[in-house]
Image 1 (cartoon, rainbow, N blue to C red):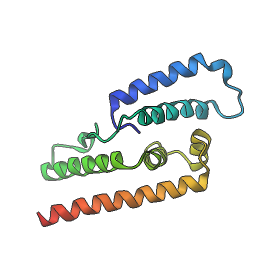
Image 2 (tube, rainbow, N blue to C red):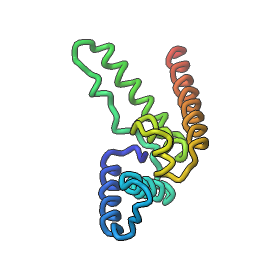
Image 3 (cartoon, rainbow, N blue to C red):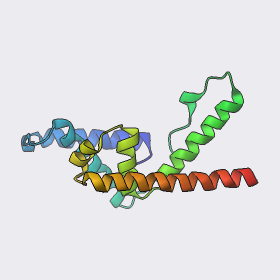
Image 4 (cartoon, rainbow, N blue to C red):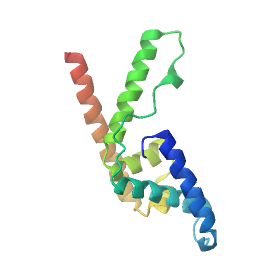
Length: 148
């Protein structure tokens, strides 16, 4: 959500520390996992609202797709991952949040609703719009690469 692995780790540690100190306030009216994720998501939201932006290049490099057997394919994979990471980072925060939780974390909408407090129908709209924004951004990128 913040597009920086080190910062994400720091925010996750902060979330765990906040959860530990707030453990007495856990009422048990939702799953512990949802409660913990909500603390983490709120921490990311707070960081983004504080003026920090996740618009810098991502830590994703595509190295996990590189085999060394196909240099051209490996280079294309790196470029595709980099372009996708940049496009995700450029999404408005509420769309990036919904898209990341649904597609990257593989959470069902009901679980995302429990974590974020956003209704399932609104989440579906956000994920759908995020996909459209990504298609447009990546389509423009592909169009400019073909013409150059």
